[in-house]
Length: 152
Image 1 (cartoon, rainbow, N blue to C red):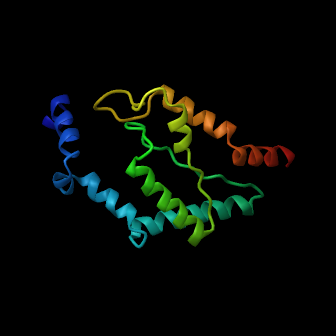
Image 2: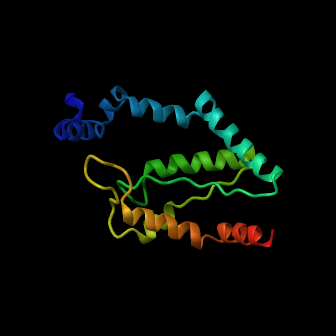
């Protein structure tokens, strides 16, 4: 299929950067659904977090939620991070669930702005995985949860 040619992928990546063309791309429409806290997909995600937390507590455990940030354009003013922060705040206020934010850690420790495999493969590379692992290991909330688990 023509969709698999790297040139087509690069053109799509370029076209979505033009604000007036974004509405024609499925992932943009899908992202808008996740920004709407009244959307069914968003409600489902939040209820799933609540169920996971509840199940862990019922079994004598604890849980720490976080997310894996976008690593293709790491910057202080990334609008995707602002979206995550609105979601994190909404979940904290309305569901009573805390979600850790690893993005400041990425901004501080990323050796370059892009930590993905290539221009067309936006998956995090090994450096990004190391930064995420360091965030999890060094985070005080994670450390306290790990010590609680050791005590049990």
